[in-house]
Length: 66
Ligand code: SF4
Ligand code: SF4
Image (cartoon, rainbow, N blue to C red; front, side, top):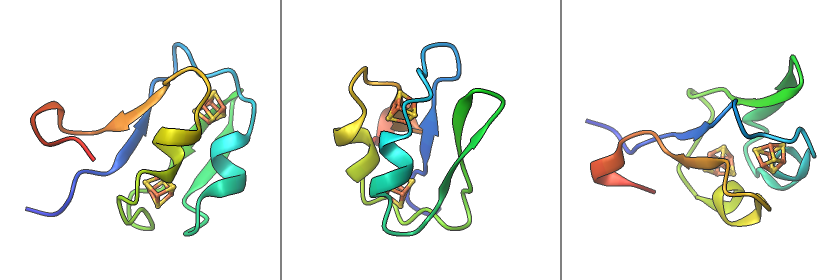
């Protein structure tokens, strides 16, 4: 099993773009007024999780968070 990938809570994302600007893998993109993660690109670095001002990003697996 691979590392958990970042996932955006679409219900609280403000579409500020902060996570997109910091992702070293260019794995985040804006779609429909919220950020989305291209899982294949995500290396689970957690930079986006730390940068999100409202905590909208987490690891996909609750038991194995990034
Ligand atoms: S965990 Fe890292 S690689 Fe994955 S989407 Fe967030 S910033 Fe990008
Ligand atoms: S930093 Fe957080 S609020 Fe801003 S676009 Fe990314 S997930 Fe949404």
